Image 1 (cartoon, rainbow over the protein chains, first blue to last red):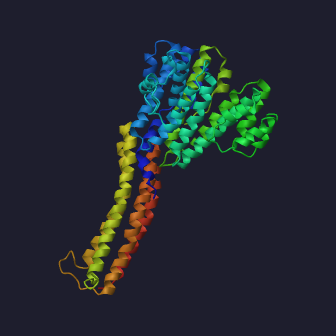
Image 2 (image 1 turned 90 degrees about the vertical axis):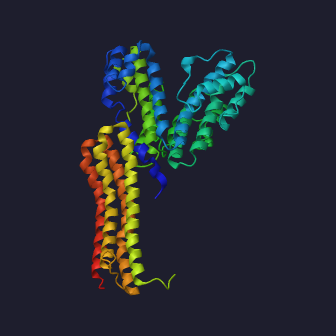
Length: 334
Length: 160
């Protein structure tokens, strides 16, 4: 039998942690609360209770979410037998920090503390800051180091923030795929994720009428939808994408997402469906008794939950009608 | 080595394998459930009793192996003190009789451990479903019991 029994402890522990996620009823009650303060009160009745109690101002709810994210990642790092899974999932926070620091450096300013994730990424923020201070990036994983050096080598008079995003996002997925190569389930998951990001990118590129050169630069290399398919579709109308992807697992995501774009001129439904697709993919594997699936599911569920809280809180603070908040809400995992 | 291999040595080898292999299986199975149970109890200490029940289940194969081993020792006179002179044929017969419980005990205990560890995950979510989690794991027990039955019938069928 395979050595997947090393996951026995972690899977069982994750099963208990899953019980503490917010359920659909709690999310709905938050969404239905008349205002931001009341929504936060609903949150205060859950496991977030003590964190909500410490919050002084409703507008600072982001602190609460960042602290929760850091707490969850810190906790699973302590007991999980397969660090690569957590590293792959947390790499996006490293890249986020790198982007913020690069942009700050490019503009010759201090990076705003509130824009950085101090405790979630794989590389401690303090270490990143030292790297920038000493201009020594040797300790970064190779793909990220190359990306940072590429961006910094291109520093001209006018640093282009978009270039930073493009180069680092490309490096992020190369980094993730080198990390997770030995774990087939993770490879499948991140391939889906890269595909969905490429589809969203392609739709945006086409809407903004950018050229082929730009498309080539922004497409991620990790997905298994071939890049030439997007290039062929670029001169055609958006509907052609639906037809070409009709037999892929993403048919529904693309079709419904584009329908909303045509009716209302926004892509929120596409974003929501793409997130739901990934969550559903992981959810369909969550009952594996041994393996990386339950933890990946749990971490995605936590990120999803924080996103839901953020959508509700931002909506409440901006006095959006309940219906409009509901439209943006994703599924819950449990 | 083979010159010294007499019937009684073969019979004792059978007993050793019955106790040893079934015991190894149980140890792996119980260990696996133990890992799962620690995962649950570290977050939710109240579940100790329930998870302990599930952990005990893969332990039975080891007992079946020991039972078979004792039976061989008793039938061949190791326990009583007057060792029987067994022919090679009798020795092989006893050895073969020990095989069902040794082999099935080893593998079924591991399989049962996995089922019980999954059951630990089940009661982490739904503590009220402990009975069902136990039933799923106990289904595996059937085949260990059948193997024990076969081993015992075979042993009593051999005339010394």
